[in-house]
Figure 1 (cartoon, one colour):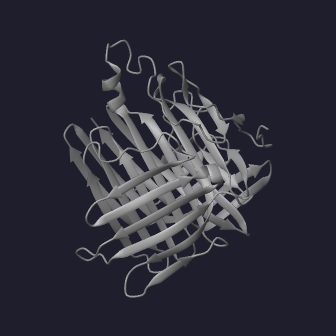
Figure 2 (figure 1 turned 180 degrees about the vertical axis):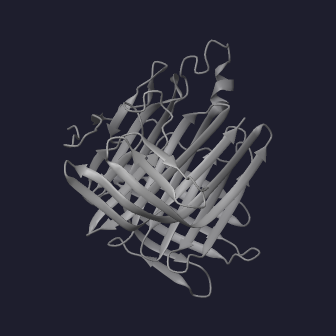
Figure 3 (figure 1 turned 45 degrees about the vertical axis):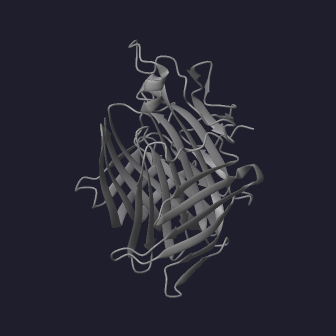
Length: 358
């Protein structure tokens, strides 16, 4: 069944195909459910008529897996990034009461980690001496698991966590999309999924934070992209409850030539998928000050106020990646039906500002 709302803008959502690319052609569109095979390799001439062999064009595909979790006391993100020549893992945790931030990072050598091409049954891991992270998907059964264990280092305490992400509650849903990556011969494929979360995080000295599925949410953002020589993106993700209803959203500056038709902006509201129009994300006084997120259809009008910033610059061979992960809160509103606004006040989430250059 297609999800269509009575709002100024929507996109038709149909069941996901088996894979994002068929017969060397990207299947652009918005979908429900997950791709059986999450793989975008094999697109015909993704970089024009230049005769690059596939083993060269495949190295221009970047994989990003982000898993967020949030309750009244804690918001966290586990991120894996694979760039063809290198990979890294970052886990960032913010105490929502004290605003204290902890970040655990690990650069991973070529071939040390590969993000899976099967979403329903897969595993992604970082396993080194002082850093261990595993994301274990059993979405074929409606479950995903995350484990992490970090030894103390410098001013960071030891940290350990065991989390269960349950996709089966009726307020949880998913969304897939294939959109052009700046030009129609290249693509980006994404898969989003919301969860109820149960588990615990330990910061040492018997300091446990318990996450309960009645008040804790999770959000999975998994994407594969044909990357250009220079890429800039701004992304915001929010997750929490409003009047007992589960709310998650993803918004970003679009990379598609026809962003009105193809983008990955989406709002999950109580199990419903509400496609959102292209937005413009600006930070007039710098990314450490207020972010403004607005559209032209009067469906999105948000301000994101940063609270804590985690920043990292990576220079690996021919790659340069500068990124910020920012915890903060949202104020503003979405239009979820004609004349029906969804108001946000102090709503938790994160923002990402990424610049990549090859």
